[in-house]
Amino acid sequence: MDKLLNLQNVGVIRDGRTILQSDDLHIPLRGITALVGPNGAGKTTLLRLIHGLIEPSIGQCERPFAPHESALVFHYTPMLKATVREHLTLLRDTDRTIRDEAIDEVLQSVGIAHLANNPAQRLSAGERQKLCFARARLQNPKLVLLDEPTANLDPNASDDVEQMIAQLAKDGKAVLFASHNMAQVKRLATHLIFMQDGKILEISSPGVFFKNPQTKEGSQFLAREFIAQ
Image 1 (cartoon, rainbow, N blue to C red):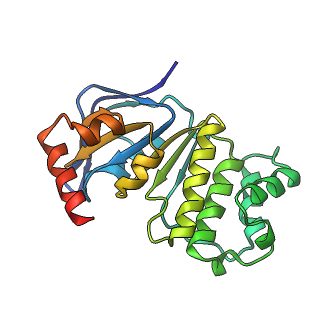
Image 2: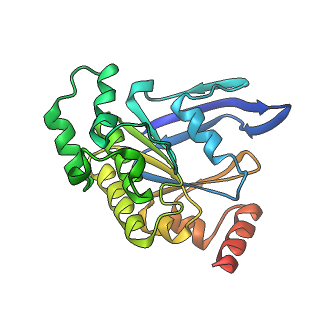
């Protein structure tokens, strides 16, 4: 059975401006769901809301997962003055069951085991993102939220990240990722959410959305995206 994110007349207001609003919506979280829309659509706000980093200003958000059952990866995460391995051992502050063997395994799985003792601040952008994925996998979440996971990465690093996203789904995780890369969305996503001006306008599949968007806003968005490409 699909896990549902229930938004009940939700509004998120910042500095007197509504940056996210919805009527009663039930969003299934399963497979790999792409979150698409123009800049300022509210994608990052929705990810933060789902993860529990923010609460709605009005209305209710019923999350299908407990806070420790979801992981959020941003497109850029500042690193501490610590080694790659130490970034992962810090998770023991909240989960004492994490073993050294599990840390070794997850570093190997994302391809940075050889960097375990290197300062994390010296990692390339792609290596930093792999470390963030390693941290997320070590948490063993049911839901993984990704905000522009391949932004500013070179093609090889982007390919590696896409493979990691696909593997998360194969491992049974629900994945929700925001992306401006429509080719990437077509490659990865099994489901799609389209947003604009803080509103969720379409909940669909990539096949349906790209061939026959159900809203005028969706059609205009796709026209702009493909002209830009």
